[in-house]
Length: 126
Image 1 (tube, rainbow, N blue to C red):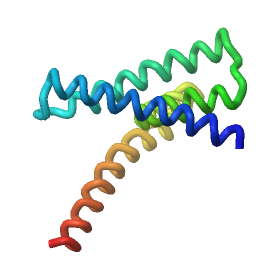
Image 2 (image 1 turned 90 degrees about the vertical axis):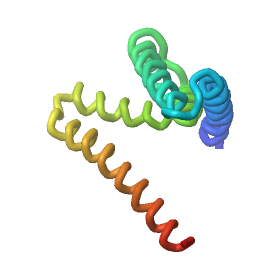
Image 3 (image 1 turned 90 degrees about the horizontal axis):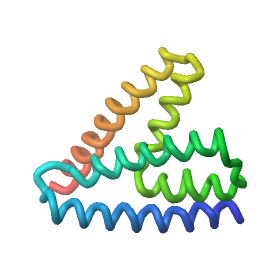
Image 4 (image 1 turned 60 degrees about the vertical axis):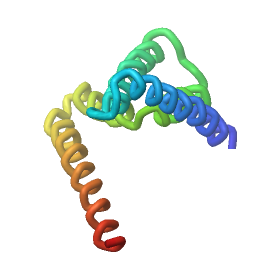
């Protein structure tokens, strides 16, 4: 239960942050390109990369704090950060082929799944 509450609290902060970044970036850049999502994904990956390295070298937080920050805050801010962590972990373990399959497969199948979901709902609703 303690772990779940840690993730939930972090998720509230991450989701709030994502909303605030979206509002600010959309006001500045408009709606023509998904700048907000792009910035959130890149920023989330930057923060997760720095956090993982900091935890590896200088800080050993509790499992609850790790879950709060990684799964909760950054997971809610951007799920792309978790994808990047997994891909880099495979790469650093020397599993280059598997890392490549994971990256290409995740991007292609996620986009395909998104389009399939849209098309299914369009077929049902029209």
